[in-house]
Image (cartoon, rainbow, N blue to C red):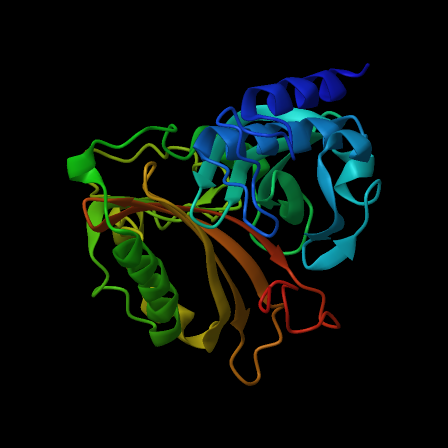
Length: 324
């Protein structure tokens, strides 16, 4: 028995086997959904990922109609991440949404000795996994990328927020959607946020950094200056918070299209949001397939961490999940 198979059996025992008659003697009526709470969803997520590491689809509790994508491309059991994902890295975050029956992982997953920045969203229905959406960012890919940067600038630790710090589900989605709209409008100042709000994209911290430092690069070497020589403006200027400077996107983002918010973890204060950027006419940069984790505290945006992939020019205009 593999480690994953054993874990699957333990999960099913702890949750009650599918189709088992409940202790009150009343079986689940046909067609009625079997609920899966936070512990159940997190358990399924861990079982699924461990099965992927071992390339053992039979242990993953997949539905017969299971569907999965990696960077908007469909793959079957044993293909894609199943064939090359080998384990967890040091940065791991998990979120759950019992209302939609979904769970998500954000952090490092390994391919051999290499850490990739990965987002994995699963949907659980009747205690089996029906969907898996992977966004994988690898060093060397096109565009903004610094895998090591995620360890230097990790997301907030997992936590159960006190009730007075939680935000309603409606407001959390409104803030996340407002952020996408602000990118499209090239003006983020109307988004409620903390001045300390950070934005880290594919491991690259783009907020509160010296503007003289290249994005994704190491800090510049210190330069000794004469006592009577003031630092240059470039050396002193610091980029703003997570909604500052959106005017620079005027030439890069025409529209944040196909927005989705499939998971809202009200307990942890996290929204999973996804979009694809449409470029302005004449801009030949690749489109971003963007998966964002929005951290919301007390009705304000507190931070954003993203895994994103730059779609091939020939790729269709879809993540594959807009109509699911």
